[in-house]
Image (cartoon, rainbow, N blue to C red; front, side, top):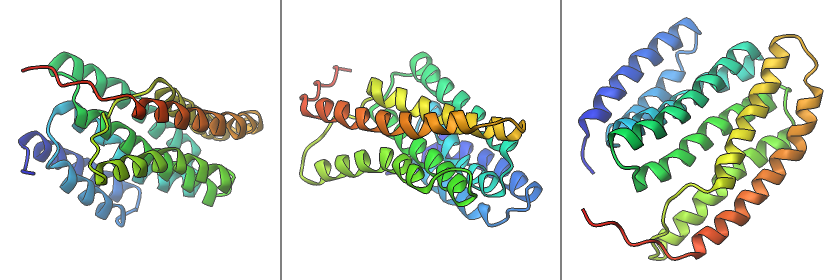
Length: 224
């Protein structure tokens, strides 16, 4: 691995933004997280992947605001994260071919963001702890399974699945929706009840679909 110019420049920009946020939010401890993500990001090439990494950086504000029960700010963080999810794919298609690295990076940063948000909401008393653990397992178990396959000498093709994308959207919409309703002083019990049903079902569907996808042989890379 070697340093990538795009990664270094993007990391410097994110660090400046992270520093300004940490000072404004009185969360200097978050600077350690921003530095850690920037160090990793310095080795990740491509502008699309750097946009994806924004969701990893946003994990710190998501956790902090969720713990503080600042629901309006949480909803804003989720909205920004959703925008980056749309933008990174567009950049990958228009500037460069979507890459295997990008396919693997997306679920990792999604898991970091949603896991931080769910744990923050659970510890803040907004969200059931068991459901937060389901959200974490949604991303952690597939990542562990992929790591085991790679360790065994297999080379699974890293790609999006429809159920994986849908489950991520549902999780962000439901978590963000609960926070938005709380921020507007509205009753969020309906959304919370829906989350307790929809998120476990979406997670199970993701596992099943991903299992079938990993069983299919990887396509040979295109020449050039």
